[in-house]
Length: 320
Length: 311
Image (cartoon, rainbow over all chains, first blue to last red; front, top):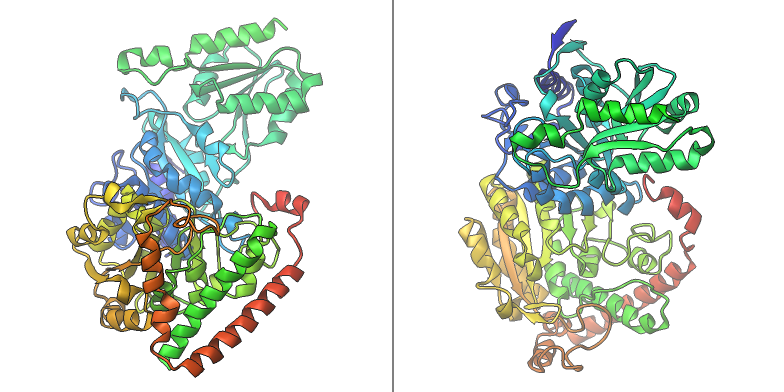
C-alpha cells in the first residue's frame, strides 16, 4: 500500500467514486481549473469534464442550494466550501432545506449531499479561516457530521459519506492536510459512519478527541495509561464505544479545538452523566479553545489546546 | 377546450381556498395558511406547460401551485388537518407541500429559499424536461434571488422563474422595499423576461397565450425564462382575514381584487352554461375531498417523534 497524505486521500476517494458512479458531481468555488484552494480536487476537471466538476459563482448560498436541487433530482453532489466559516453564508440552505427534506417528504426522497470544508486552527490563517463550528451542524436534526484524523480515515469516511442518503458535513482538518502520511488502500474501501476508533487501549483515562486534536492527545498521553478514542463521526457519535471505555477507566478528558461553551464536548459529557454516572471516578474534563474567535497566527499556539494543557487535564483526572 | 380546462383549474383552486376559509374559524386546521385567492390564474396557466416530470418548487403561498401541478385536494386538506393522508404525511403543513408523483419537489416557508434549489433542479434535468420555481416579489428582495438568476443564466439552464408580484410583502409595499421591478434584475443577468400586466396575469387564458411561444423556446434549450406576473392578493398575508377592510392595505387594493378577479376574467372565455356546469362539478369534488380528508387518521404523536429524524 502506498503512503499518501489527506489531500491525496480525499482526491482519491472523489476520483474513484466519480469513476464508479456517474451521479457524483463536484462543485464549488475554484474546484475545477484551480483544483480548489487546498488543491484537493486537482485533476478532476481534466478527467471528468465541466459537467461533473463545476466551477461555481462566488455564492455559497447558491452553491448549497444548487446541490440540494441536484440531489432532489437523484444526483450526488459533493460541495466544497473554501473554509468552514464561508459555509455560514450557506447555512440557510443547509439548515432550512438539506437537513429537512427527508423528514419533510416523510422519507420519500433524501438529500444525499456532502459538504466538504477545511476546518480548524493551525494553518496560520486569520479568523473566519480556521473556525471549528462542528457543534453548530451537529445541533441541527437531519445532518451527519464527520471528521477524519488520518489519510486512511479520510478516504474511507468520504466514500461512505458520498454514498450516505443524508446530508453529511465533512470536516477536513486543515492543519493535517499534508502533515501526515499513512497507508491507504488503493481502490474501493469504506469506513462506517457513526463508528469511533479506539486508537490506543488503556486503563486509567478515556481521552476523547477527533481530527487534528487526536494527534495532540497522542503526544500528550506519554506516561499515562490512556485509552484514546478517535470519534470520527461527531453526529451521531458512537455511544457504545465511549461507554465501554468509560466503564473501564472511570476518568474522561475530552479535547476539542472548538470553544468549550455548547461545544460537542458538552453533549458527550451530558451523555456520560446520564449513562455512566456510577462509573465515573471524577468530573468529566474538557480541554478546549478560550471563549474568543480565532486570533492571528502569533497567538495560534496559545489558542489551540496544547500538549501541556492536555497533560494537566490528565494529571487532574488522575487525582480522583 | 383549453379555456375550459384553465377555467376548471382556477375554479378548483378558488373553491378549495374558500373551503379553507369556511372551516378555518373552527380551528380544525391548526396550521397557518397563506391563501392563493386573487392569484389563481398564474399557477393554472404556467402549470399547463409542465408535465409530471418537470420538477417544481414553491413558497409559503403554494396551494395554487400544488393543485395546478396535479395534486389532489384530499392530500391538501388532509395535510392542513394534520392527517397521515396529507401530501406531506400531515407533518409539514400548508407551507411544506410535497407531491413527488406530480413533480412538486416541495414548497418552503423560507422566502427566497426555493430559488437556489431550483437552479440545482434545472442542472439535474435533461431537456426536454424543465424546472420551475414560483415565488413572490418578497423573494426578489433576498440575495438568493440574484445568485440564482446569475447562476442559471451563466449555465443556460432550462429553468422557469415565475414571479407572482402582488406588490406586498405582508403589508409593506414594493416601493418601500425595492428600487426596481424584479424583472430588471433578471434582465441585468441576461435572462429572457416576459411581463404580464395584471389584466393578463389574472386571466389564465390570456396568460397562457402570452407565454406559449417563450415556453416552447425554454423547452428547446433557449436558457432560463423569467415571467413577472402582476397580481393582487385578495385576503391577508396569512390567514383568512380581509386585511384591506381592516385598513392594513389601502382601499384601492379592494378595487383591484374586484376588477381583476381571476375566476371572472378566465370565465369570460367560455359560456355561462359551461361555467356553471364546471363550478357545480368542482363544488362536489371539493366537498367530497374535504369529507374524505376528515376521515384520514391524525398523525400519531409517538410515531411522529420516532420518524422525526430519519423516517
